[in-house]
Length: 181
Image (cartoon, rainbow, N blue to C red; front, side, top):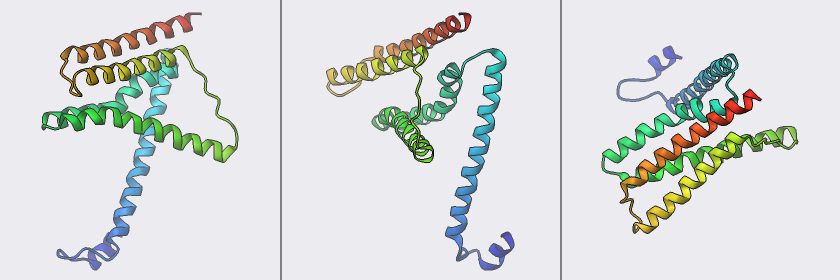
C-alpha cells in the first residue's frame, strides 16, 4: 500500500483513494484499541481472581478510574482554558453517553442476536454506587439551581469528593463482608 501511495500522490496532491485510507486507518485503530482493551481487562480480571476481588469492585475502582482519567484531565484542562460551563457539562455528558450507548448498544446486540433476556443481578455494591450517583446528581441540581444556575459554593466540591470516598469505602466494606461469609 505504501508503494501505491508513493506512486499515486505528490507533495501537493493526496492520492485519489485518500478517504479510503483514512477510513481504513480508523478501522485499524479501532481494532487495536479493542485488542488492547481486551488484554488489559483480562489481566485485571486475572489479578482480581488471584487477589479475591470481585468484578463489581474491579469495575467500581480500577476500571472506572481507567475509564474516567482521560475525561478528568480533559475537563480540568477545558475549565482552566476558560470554558467551565463546557467542562461542567462534559462531567455529566460523558458518563451519560457511556451509559446510554454502552448499555443500549450492547443490550440491543445481545437481545437481537440471542433473542434472550439479559439477567441483571443487583449486588449491594452496585446499589450503593447507584444511590451515591443519584445523591450526587440530585444534590448538584439543587445546589446549582439555588445558586442562580451558577456553581458558587466551593463546599459542594468537597461534599462530592467525600461522597465518592464514602461510597468507595462502603463498597469495599460490603465486598469484604460478602467474601467473609
